[in-house]
Length: 458
Image (cartoon, rainbow, N blue to C red; front, side, top):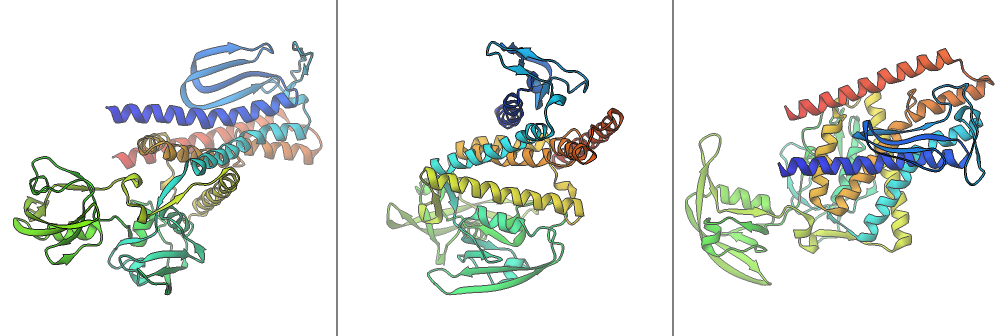
């Protein structure tokens, strides 16, 4: 129940911020060009809050936080015009009375505001400091692309297609750019405690063109490196009985050396109901811990070993030697903010292009349910993750609104350009027809996204 409440609160806060900034961009530009704003609203449906300013603009919050709008004078009736005097003696005009250039800037200001929000969000992230897991391999799946490249446990990924990789997040982003493609992926990596660079190209054919059911890194065949460090010990378990503690790092199980959590799970699972010795590193010292491995039955009725410990689940628990910590001053953080916004913009544009061309399944499109789940997960992960989700969804909203679909900002810009080329206003009947087509397309997209969300749950 608490998880559902967190998801609801998170999505309201998240959408409120990115939609509010988007509409604020339109509002600010309209005011800049002296266009009278009738209503500034966040959300749809019945208003929960409403207030008027001295210029007669109504500010309100709707009950459904799934959108918003800025209504300007003359938008409903292109022939309508009005001038109002504020206390500052500023004459305001209707939207149709503004020049084409002014209308284009007002229309584009919403998506631009979303990109600015993303830059600011990433700027804050790099100022606060972000911890990313180093691109060290913790496991390699059989018959995977990673195995074909000769990658082994403990190797560090240096670059993908000659693009330098500093963290698992960058590895995921670089591989995401190759989804749905045919050709080859060039992987450069190093062995542990070695400066020797290995380079290998692996062939792909319509790679991951259907719906993804696991992470991109896992699909490539790499499991992230998770050290065999204990995060928690279950009560009345063999681990508690043997005196194992949070923060202990398992070095060996019997005579078997353990490097990763996956190796630890595999070894413990293979020796149910057996007494063994664990060598454990604790506070810089290595001690021996006798332990009895209990057992549980898997789905096939086979006994597997268990000792009652759990792995680390967040970067905050990860030993610093396996982390890449990025914390910058204001100037560097701002530069990285622009860079990160650009990188994700290119990634999203690439994904949209591949969906349109059919090289990637449209089943990857997510709707409000998926956004709620992701925003809730980001909120649980902490402030930095939540700010990162704001940045990513803000870029998404900015790009979606720039699509050349009537009723979206991109479609409005196309109509403005058409009016410029024609040399005279477009007919009301043509604009009404274009808006109806655009509305059908947007509703269809929303229905499809919600359908995808439901099928993921089912």
